[in-house]
Length: 286
Image (cartoon, rainbow, N blue to C red; front, side, top):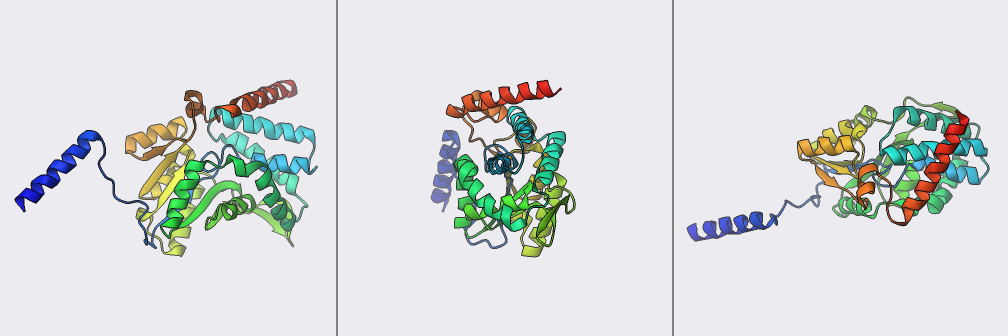
């Protein structure tokens, strides 16, 4: 017994010295009281889902060029800053509501499937996708939790094989959008409340659950669970995560990309060009 204990202690000491200490298995297979909650924009997908949706609607002549310029400016800001600015989010929300007003819910749902294939599928982060799949393979449920419209979130969740999605709900009457919201956008503390309510309804133990996000705005949601992850984090979340010893994953490449959240390699040129154009448009409008 003494010899076995000594050998085990020596093995652990050697692993620690080599930086190869084994961690407990996670996700835990067969734990039906655990689940995972993923933010969408810049966590699961590069950029903002609402912007990509707007591009698809513009292609289908839902709105005019000047409104597309507004979407482009909002996306450029998101890419450059790497954070969710409340003022820009409000503008994006109002733009989207005015665009869909009077259209049927079923019509937007059908178009959403097409737009996913056109603009969103290639922007899914493979690393985050693998994390979600690990939870699914462990027999756990996986939800998207996003301020994006719930119809968009549901399409993405379905295409990725996830359990479902929580998102901002636009009001509809007799299947037609009114241009108003039901309640407030699912953002910041509202995400935490939604996750808490879902966990209660599903009989989940939040201390055994995981949450993933890129934004400091989601610290309330991340703080709810026993396994918080900072994915492609903005500077405030990175600092917070390091202070609390949360796990970090950054799937962006290049020093600049890691700093501000802009896709590297071939994507940088396209983003830079689009950003310059958006800034020029904004200055002319002013």
